[in-house]
Amino acid sequence: MIVKQAGFEKSVANLSQLPDDALPEIALAGRSNVGKSSLINRMLGRKSLAKTSSTPGKTRTLNYYKINNALYFVDCPGYGYAQVSASMKKMWGRLIETYLTGRKELRLVLLLVDIRHPPTADDIAMYEWLRHHGLPVCVVATKADKISRSKQASQLRLIAERLGMRGDAALIPFSAETGQGVTELWEMIESKLPGM
Ligand code: GTP
Ligand code: MG
Image 1 (cartoon, protein in one colour):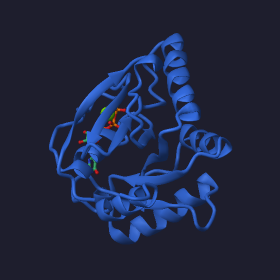
Image 2 (cartoon, protein in one colour):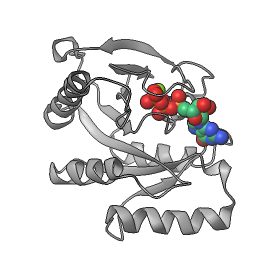
Image 3 (cartoon, protein in one colour):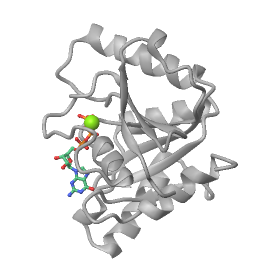
Image 4 (tube, helix red, strand yellow):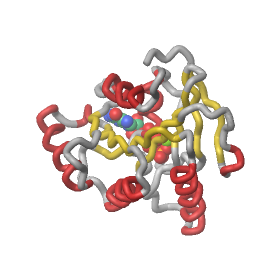
């Protein structure tokens, strides 16, 4: 994919605000601070289109980014952020859950996990939930630049095993820092967008 045009489209705080132009959507899920916004910036070749932060839990809405007037990346609020109230968590949960299970434009969910650590209980629950709902998932192991290539290989095996991934399930190491995985991830996304 050659990104000719990319921009922030809108923040969605409730489902009535979802776009109605029927463009295909690629959602990004993962715990706070895993690198969702950084991945979007790197994939789109734009330094700070999606806000990144060292304070986890900044993203509280579904944030839509439009690419080439042809598709959206949808940055979902990070899960597993402790410092929000239970009622707040519930509200986010409902928004994401309803979006992910009911959105016919959704073509693929990118589930981001940190390559340096075994998946958390939240990561495992999220993967199982996505599979349970029959959603197409690609697991992206972020921050790959932080460990050596040989360590990457063993961590990928560990992640696949802990998530209970089938042998043919998609798992891509990625670095927003070096650009590792950008080509593979675009290929994965394009495979879900026939005719593009
Ligand atoms: P929330 O919006 O809070 O859910 O976080 P997020 O998942 O969008 O994470 P974000 O992209 O803001 O990144 C969190 C921190 O990790 C920032 O300090 C980033 O610079 C850093 N980071 C993200 N991706 C990478 C990466 O590939 N390599 C390195 N070295 N750092 C990264
Ligand atoms: Mg973010």
